[in-house]
Image 1 (cartoon, rainbow, N blue to C red):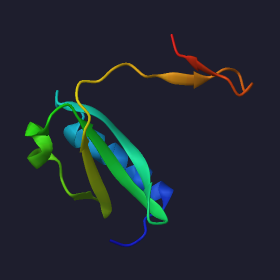
Image 2 (spheres, rainbow, N blue to C red; image 1 turned 45 degrees about the vertical axis):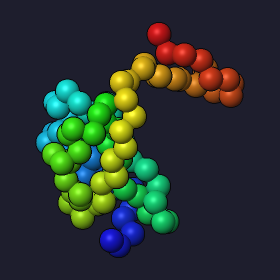
Image 3 (cartoon, one colour; image 1 turned 90 degrees about the vertical axis):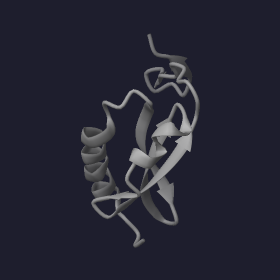
Length: 88
């Protein structure tokens, strides 16, 4: 696959979320750096939905990882002071 820029990856992510975002086995959809470009990354709770995930969307590769049941990990920068604080 050719190198994909970030703008293209973001547009493809929106499309992928529309297609698979409502599946209960999907923990998250993101963008990951790969070989000087970008790919989409799908986190699944279990392997049973892997076949429903397309290998590419709008020319952007899709990587799948089974991460298990999700745990809330929302983090936020603490007002630019360099400290990481848990989001409420």
